[in-house]
Image 1 (cartoon, rainbow, N blue to C red):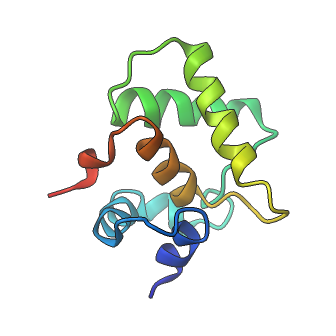
Image 2: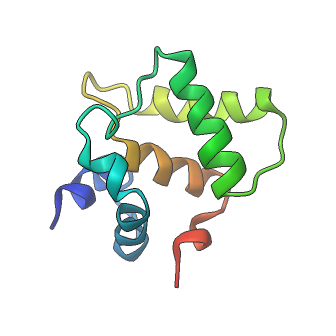
Length: 106
């Protein structure tokens, strides 16, 4: 099992490994940078990037910024275990929350 699998399975034990692989391939550049491989819950600019680039652009969501921000906050709160917030896990949980894992299938 790869580190990518472990980072997601720690928060979503039922995660689809093929989806994790596709996400890892899609975001390989960000994941190769140690700082970019995590999501800073305390950085408003980082959270805006997750909302605008991942939720809106990649997943095609059209909900209000407030609703999307609340979803990000909920996912990050569910991951509060004293460890970093792995970007791949955050993205997986958000895609799952909105029923958009199919974006990474096939």
